[in-house]
Image (cartoon, rainbow, N blue to C red):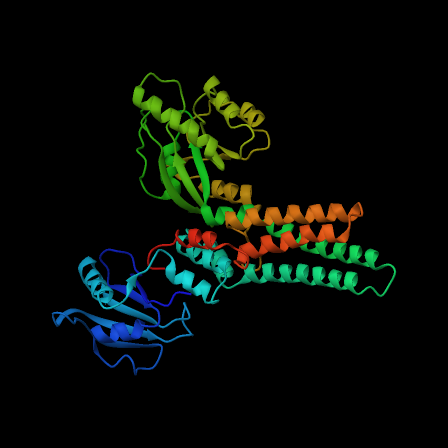
Length: 458
């Protein structure tokens, strides 16, 4: 367990009203006391904020006018003494204060080390620690709600219950084997194992059934806007983003590159990509953009395929339908304020069961219908982030899949009458896999790797 005192800037670098230098460790209060001109921080009550000045002990010069928060262990985030020095925002003041703190006994924290200490001291488990970063990175209210529920221990509580159920089952089977009181002890053990593995497997499958939705909330949908040049792709992007991010002209081939932007659509975070129009071209720059667009298609979760209501369906459009066959896409028929030239029956035939939405982006018509179609395509209606436990982390999803497979092996073994001690191997493996989610059976290297992805002051 770490015994030194760490420090870092915990607010974004740049101009602002305040900036915070945080310290955590056994010497946090004493280090700050050496550089603080104000009340005696060794004697103030815990969880108080105190006015004063940070002084450079070497020169006796004032570094900044500050408010210092004192929080004594164990009722802190890291379960260590924590000091937060509230400085004036700006590059110079906060860096000056940090340098003085470092020169008086603290060391610079590693990325995520504050949260890592909270985990190591039992303040939070590994899934809750990962939820801290999810909360920081949340791009919609719904994504934030899912992260908050995970931080509050909803997922870890469920995982721990499943692990306890498996542990008790294995223990009971061991008792039956070691101290048999009945002739049918083997049959009793098999039946007990069958019941519990089915229950735990069903709970894991329930988590996995909404994992796709949770992952979308956490990472966003990679969404590509495709179509021939001048059908309104850039206008669609600007409408959804509500900013003029893409150049909108009536000149085909204006968009020469891939433009990315995050946008919130009914609580669904979309990583929106406006691609260059996919067509045959001799323009070298445009040709590069078209190739990038084709690559984007392969990496997209959702495709918005834009057609022009005022243009006939051509072979190029039909090729695009073929290119996205088997993918999730929505057909958008744009420019419905103009005269119809598009063969709608043929479009419906090509789209099959995929949603078709009519819009006139210049008139701002049909956007609500499109947003509903996007949400319904992935969430089949309103997403419940209140009562549902969502798994959103790829690491958690992969571990749950492995745990589900291990239990399926155990259930298959039960049905064919495999010896109980062989079955326990798969059940114990499931217990270990679930333990990796909350950190009980995670390796030190995995823990170090996870926390290294955090920002410096968290």
